Length: 205
Image (cartoon, rainbow, N blue to C red; front, top):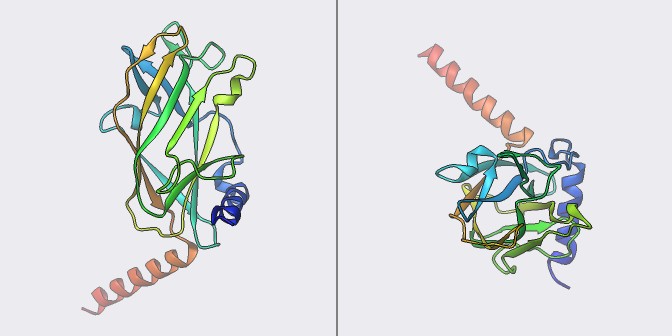
């Protein structure tokens, strides 16, 4: 039996149970995939859409020995120069291609049995727009690690792109997602104690 056989369901369950992991599975905050000047691009959030094309997210402790975070992905929509979800998407197809991932970090698409990103994973996630099921390109990838050694990063690019009108698109720049841990309550206690000791020493000095 693969390691993922029990670890992946545990990770997904932990994500659902964490209150701040947003039981909200809407589109707000998702990586919006589109194109600019014939080249694939992430159009929002702004932090990753512009140089240095880097997004920092916080992974939450599960209390089960690992950290998790949910990253949403969707196709951007354009109408009159503005992004509007109710109109046709900018893309017909795109592939997220893993270029580098910190050892011990992996990402699994919700509803899938095995990780798609990670050292021994396929490292590619292809999304194809289906007009009969527009939500099929709206995915949530749960990233998790039990060996946190920040900074943990996931670097990828967008490739194999086809615009909604059928035009081929060039590959994107390299994007980086950096994962930082949210300290567990015990960690906060240790930090507070340390600060208290330092202040006490200063007063006595």
